Amino acid sequence: MADPIFEVDTHETDRESATVVEVTSAARDVVLGARAAENDPEHLALWIEVNGTNGSSYSYDIYFQALTDAAEEDAVYKADELPVVVPAASAEKLLGATLDWSEDGEGGLVIVNPNTPPRSAPAMQLGDLSGDLAQRVLAVLEEQVNPAIAAHGGRADLIRMDDDVALLNLSGGCQGCGMARATLSQGIEVALKEAIPELKGVVDVTDHDNGTNPYYAAAH
Image (tube, rainbow, N blue to C red):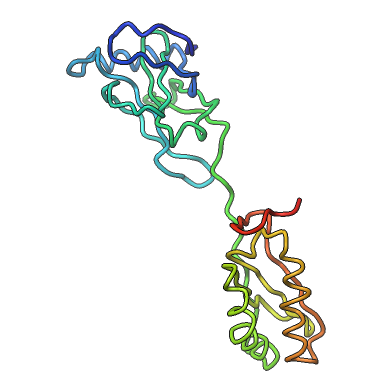
C-alpha cells in the first residue's frame, strides 16, 4: 500500500502529498521492473493521469517521466520506493483509485476507480413543431422572449406542444437559475399568452440540476 508520508532523499524534490492513487505491491513490482529498463531510471516517476472518458468510465495514461517535471500543484508521493505523480487536473478524478496488476489474459496494469465522469443531461426529444400554434410560439420566442432574456445569457426553446400547452427548455443563463420559475411565469408565459390567447399554458421541462448560472445561485 502506498505511504502518503515519506522523506524524499533523491534530491529530486522536497515536496510530499497525500496519496491519490493507491499502488498495490503487485503493481509496484511490475512498474519498478519496467522502470529499471529505462534510461536513468532513478530520476523517473510513475505518472498517472486521466486522458478522457470511455463510456461511463475514465480512460488513463500511465507512463514514466522525470520527477522534476512535476508542477507545484501536482500530487507527488511515494508507493514505497516508487515515486508517483498525479497531475493536478486528474487528482480529483482519481482520488481513492487503486493501481493493480491483473493476471487476466496476458496480464496488465488496471485502475480501479470509484469515480465516474459527470453524467450529461439527456438530449431533449423534439416534437412536431410544424403546426400553426407551434409556429406562432416559435415566432414569439424568437422575436420577443429570447432577445429579452439574452441580456442574462438565457434562451428559451420550444420542445413540443402538448394539447395546446407549450413545453419549453431553458438554457444558458436560465438553466439552473433560482429565478427560472419567475422568469417563466412572469415573463415568458405572459408574453406568449398575450400574443397567443388560445395557448392554454407553458411548462418548463428543463433539467435545472445540470445547469450552472453566472448570475443567480440555483435554488435547492
